Length: 540
Image (tube, rainbow, N blue to C red; front, side, top):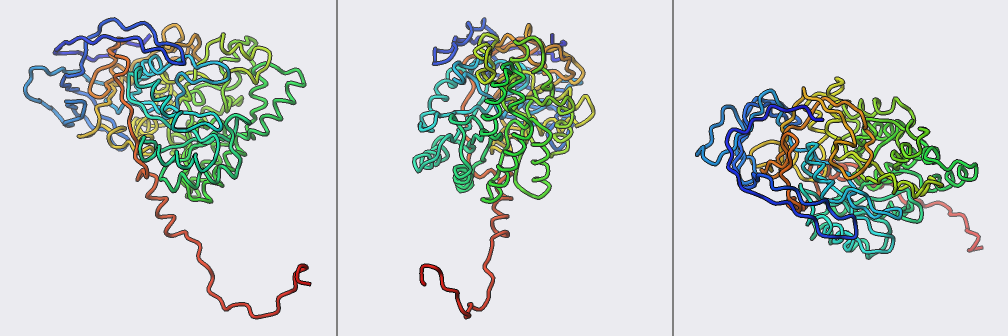
């Protein structure tokens, strides 16, 4: 359980807000309505006595919030009038920007079932963990409309989300129609990132020629090209061979998705993106070899970002060889967790030193019964695990508490860098005048033990079970509303908002534009060749 924090509510101006059961969608319905909870929606907030931590500095300061926006940051604030002011005591606590999870799959229809956490339970769990925004994925089937997929996912999310969200859109096939829809998504729908798959053969996978076209057009539109980097053909062949050998359990998943499979695809994606000067964001970086590819590319000046996930930083793939099938299957995801137990530490070191850039979760939960769809064939085990609630604490424990990164780097990798890359900054990812009041009061000294018995996700298994984490969110504020405090929720389904993201994020595209200008190939000036030309076979 979470250790009790020290936030003290000095003044209350209660109104009441009632949760609602999210409407039925082609996915699991939401949980029963929350009991009536006090609402802070219209309140003015003063966070007093804490240390405000941004990615570039930490200062002792108070934070005043009104109308969902940070109005003042400074010492000894005393906003007027005092009536109607709610004061939150952050003494000996950190006041940090709300987390941004760049990679979730809530109520995702996949592999014959639908992920357990919908947009209500998933975002409710997120705010309990200190995350105030998620970016999910709208994923069309091959041959289907990208815009229709976007509209479908948005219709699922809007009535349910407890915090702000945005949507990446997957490009699962290529045509002139796809190009037109990508432009509409950018111009009209506020999308600035597109995901391409190099895995899931015959389902989502693109060819190299299609990747070249998609990356080229992403760059033209000013968007971020994301890639699931695994060699889908090698995976298919490996799986076929392993099944023929009688290996049907979860260990077969790890063996078929070897580290070389991820590293090869990562190298290929970087090469294609660099050829067309397109910024690349490699999602769920899971292995040492893939991470080294990204590190080397960044050292060479290439515009590429790597996203490890909470599970890859906190646990390892030795779990696939656990004799309890359900335990092993619960960890199945793609790419798999590395069987090398030293990998989480390796990835955290790279994250701390800016070789890797942001932390997502790839939160895509399936319970034991759903995982059992693959009880006789590892290729049919639904891929995915949890993380949206535990991401911030796991990164603090494995990164800050271990001494690998400081509190400012923690803010960078859990919030600010994501905001900059996806053009949300400085409205998101920073505590400053004019920023959205997405704020977390964080207790660096408190501890909690992660368990499926106490987590707020819909799943019956937690891959971090038993992990003791230093660093606990005491209070989570979303758009100026206290949505979570000391274990109590104040959320209403649908209170979160869809956030549009403009193209050409400066943090990314200033470099891209400069490279375009200075790295243009130019022809060599020379006199025309005037000598003899050999006859070709056709002219003889």
